[in-house]
Structure formats: structure tokens, C-alpha cells
Length: 461
Image: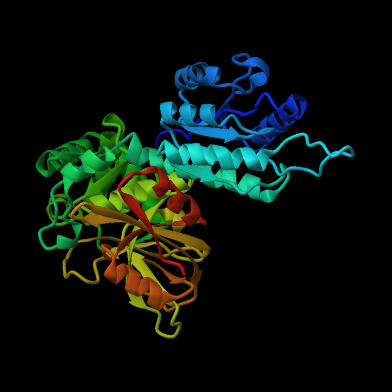
């Protein structure tokens, strides 16, 4: 995954009001960004006092941020606002923009004021709108207000998410679309043209041959790992040779991703690779999902959904492509998030890991992972669209108690399940959704502001 955004810190002042107070605000903000571990590049040594105060500063600031590789732009208004410079810097740099200014204190004893920050924000926001520059706005608040830190965090995540669909990303498709999954039909040309998403296909015959060769060449290494897996998990109906093939599939996918700069992978899952390896390769897929957005069943939009959600978490937590399958038997606001191939790091601490047979598809072959997922706050997301209309559905909930089932699962409680159900049914969304632990819906919704042609859909009321 690309690194987190580099913030171009572009403090805005003006020739009127207190320059000393503007410098104080700028310095305090720099200290806070250091404290919050937000990577940034500022204008120190580039412009006098590190402040943009005149329209003649535009080209200097833009050239500096471009050279530094800034992928986001924070324009705090430190005493008022040079609105023309704000608009031109933002327009020329062409990256997601954040607008904020500190709340003004009371006038001094003689009735004068050190700054009119709010007034400057009104002017600059109008210019940004005039130039069709989308921006995020943090409510006018004081430097120690929690809204500032939360707003910056949400914006940084949103800029990172938007980068995937502005600067582009590459998704590997291993195998072809499964014939009877019409819900995963996508328009690759539109994805490339509208969102700079490149789908890189890999032939399944070549993939299988390379995986089998890898298993043979690394037999001694895999034999040791198989022994460790048998000590750690309950493995049923799976011979050592087949399990070694599964591990080779894992490593083959990981190498393809690294060698080709993939951010996400969509995998055919069955049946060619299953028959060739003598096992369902679900354990391999779960291990790949620890490192990359991964979609079973050739779901390219699902892989995009996972990549966006993984960026929302700044790559610190894995994402799993799950699906809503049934409503909770007694809780009207809960539903089952279920599928196969969940990352093992999502396992509930009390859950046993079992690798066994497929309970839906009759087959003598083993290799399906079975375990309950951990508890916690959950965010789900689904990127999808048809006929040029693309949307990002986003929702948050929490794990809840529910009956046990097979494969990987967690019961998710939400605010109003009938509303969720109808929104998913009536929107261009299938049953697959990417999920992770944490609260990222605000960042995902905000990211759509910076992605032309992508409309946000909130699942929560």
C-alpha cells in the first residue's frame, strides 16, 4: 500500500491584522501535527515567516509542495485569508484540500481584533467553489478543541482513500469471472477511464503451474510449516501434500502482488485451482488478506472496496470481503456477516481454528477455514456501479451475540437494519461488502468529495 499522505501545510495570512498572532497560530499548529504524528511539509525557509500573505506567493508555494511530493493540502487561515492565493494554490496543486481557521478570541480592551479568521474562511471557501476545487472543512474552533484533531485525522484518511481513485491503483485478477456470479460483472474500461483503476489479469493455468512448481521446490520448507499448522489448528481431511500446495498458492499470490505493484487481488477461488491443488485454498487467501485487499470469487469491485477500506485504516488493519447472508433470529437490527477466507488476526480469542470440508458445496476435498471473528466496532464498505453510476456504500455497527455457524462469521448489530437492507437492495450493491474493525465511515464518505463520479451512500440513518 502507498504510504500515508504527505500533508502540504500552507498557512494563510494577510497584510492586515496581526502578523505576530498569525505566526503564533502557525507554530502551535506545527507542534500539534508533530504530536499527532501527521507527516507534513511546510513553507519554512521558502516564504517569509512561512506564511502565504500575497498572490505573488502562489507559484513559489506550488513549486515547493510539488517538489516535496505533497499529496494533500492543509490551508489554515492564521489571521484572515488571502482568498485569491488560496484558490490558485489549491487549483494548481490539484490535491485534496483542507480548510480551517482558529476561533477568534474577544476583541482587545480598545476594541481592536488580532484576526478575523472566520471572515477569511467565508471568502476563501467562495473562491474555492468558484474554481470548482472540492475541499474538506473543519468547523471554526480553537487549537485545543478535539474537533480539530478529529477533523485532521478524518481528512488525512479521506485523502488517502481518494488517492486510490485519483492517482490510480492496480488490481490483480487471477483467473476469470465465475460464470454464475453475474453480480461480479464489471466494466473494466470505465474503471480505468473514470477512476484510473487498472485490472491486471493473470492466467489461471500459468498460476497453477507456478504454484505446483513452487510447492515442489520448497517441499522441505513447507513440510515444517505444515507441522506447525497441525499443532496450532484442527485440520481435517487434508493430506500434507495438499496443504503444502495451499501454502504455495499463498506465496505465489504474494509474489505476484509484490512483483506487479498490486494494491488488491481478486481470485477465482474455485474450482480450477481447488481441483489442481487437491484442496480449497481458503487458508492461503486468508493469509494474503493480512497484507492486501483480497476478494474471493473474482469480485473486482469487492477488491476495490477492500482497498478503499484498508486505506481508511491507513493500512494498519486487515480487511475481509464478507457478505450479509441472513438476519439475526431474534435481533431485528442485526445480521450475519459471513464468508470464507478471513484473516486469522480477526479470530475471536476464544475461537478454535478448524480447517475442514465445505459445508455448502459437496466435495471430498478439504481446506475451508472455520472460526468466529472477534468482537468490536465494525465498518463495512462497498464500491459498485452500473451504466456509469458509481457509488460507495458505507456503514458502521458493532458485533453482537448470535448463534454459531460454519466458516468465518460475526453477527453485526446496526442502528436500523430494515433501512440498511432496503438501501443495499435498491442501490447498485450485491451481498459482498468489505469489513474491518474500527470506525471509518466519516473518512470514506468524505473521500467521495474528492473523487469525481463517485457518490456516497450512508447505510446508517
